Length: 192
Image 1 (tube, one colour):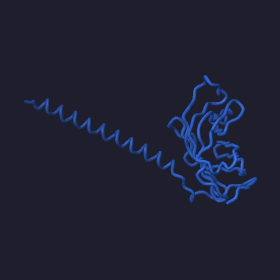
Image 2: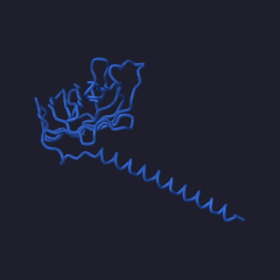
Image 3: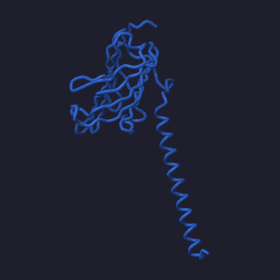
Image 4: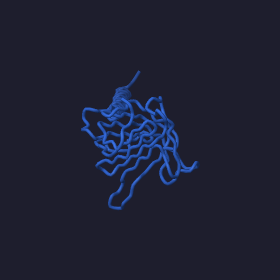
């Protein structure tokens, strides 16, 4: 038989336990909603010439939620290249060569000290001129949609933080997408 003190402690423990369970579930729910909201491509919200580039680096988003990228893009039958900048000093470069790349289910992402299929960077401290840059060393790039009006690529793999990109240096998981609306093409020579 429980005394009133034992019963009170039991009820308090149940309420605390329920509170923490509710708190944890709410936190997980809010976190997952935030990640889902960020990862949904919103083509209609972009103006012509703008791009959305979302990168998850070891489960953290690399660029700001409202970052919008601008720059140029070259699309040929055997080549894709883009160099984009956002309003916060973020920069990306994606470059690969392969015949009929837009018809492939995926392209191999690769890289080393001097070149990478995917390079991402951003300013960390403008006053000290400090930034962070990562190079894809292995992975896959998925061309999902390619036209003059819309380019949509997804990617996943591993990156290393520049300049430590040797085999023994640490790797980080990376995934994300590039969505471009009516890009500023330096060249576009792929048949529709």
